[in-house]
Image 1 (tube, one colour):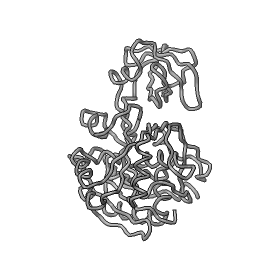
Image 2 (cartoon, rainbow, N blue to C red):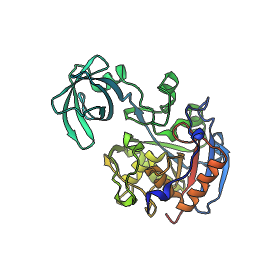
Image 3 (spheres, one colour):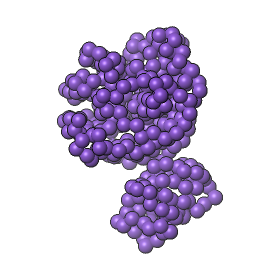
Image 4 (cartoon, rainbow, N blue to C red):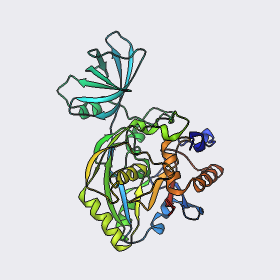
Amino acid sequence: MRTDDFDYTLPDELIAQSPCSERGGSRLLTLDGRSGHFADRMFADLPTLVRAGDLLVFNNTKVIKARLFGQKASGGQVEVLVERVLNTHEVLAHVRSSKSPKPGSQLLLAQRWQVEMVERQGDLFRLRFQAEDDVLSILEQSGQLPLPPYIEHSPDNTDETRYQTVYAEHPGAVAAPTAGLHFDDAMLQRLREMGVKLAYVTLHVGAGTFQPVRVDHIAEHRMHSELYSIPPETVDAVAEARRSGGRVTAIGTTSLRALEAASQSGTLQVGQGETDIFITPGYRFNTVDRLLTNFHLPKSTLLMLVSAFAGYDHMRGAYAHAVAERYRFFSYGDAMLIDRNEDM
């Protein structure tokens, strides 16, 4: 398939620039990937769309304040976006400046932190912080929340709360697992009381999630890899849902990617590693039955993923409906609940 097959027209005013006043206040479009039928609902209706024994799998990564500004030794301005924390003092990062720094060159970030550029690794730069503080502490002190490029305002106190899930636990993401932003503690408790099971994976979302697909044929695109972890209790929960007839719902494309990356043998496996799994139409799903997700950018790998899950034609119809009905799109936007096309 071609990248242009995943294009659609989206009016700028439908790109959500801020979250709803309350978590869970968004709209919810349900889509049956088997029939193509869709319906307009509210996210607050979610408890009516699940049943006891169902399993919801969340990504408990935590967004770090990954953006830093500073100067090169020459005085030129530089912007650093951390892609991955490697250890207590080193990161892989995107670096924007008039000229790329060379190995051994020095940066001064946030007017405070001395950083050495160690080496280039493809599009990324390996940077070493020359401070007693560890990298995560430095980012928390001096970094800026890395809002997506289509959100036009600088991050504020609201963003620091709302661009983070209520169950975020493991720091390392540079973009939020946005489907989880709709859940508040009250909704999670209500689901538990209904007998719905909750489980967690960790996938540290990289900035590559916003990377455009620059090739004409999608088979030529290569994903940036991301770190993921599947704990034993999640594998057990999936197995129990299977035994009891419950459905496995991935909360967000990042949860789905982690689950499917760890299911390449046919069944979900405990462990951790890196994944560059690229899910496109024709992919055969091993673990996930349902997907809760936001609306995704035109020509994006995430739109390709949901088209694989629901069926290409069904997804195009649902997106056309969402635009016509003026749903709110992208990270702070509305949500979809998709039942997998069983032919997928």
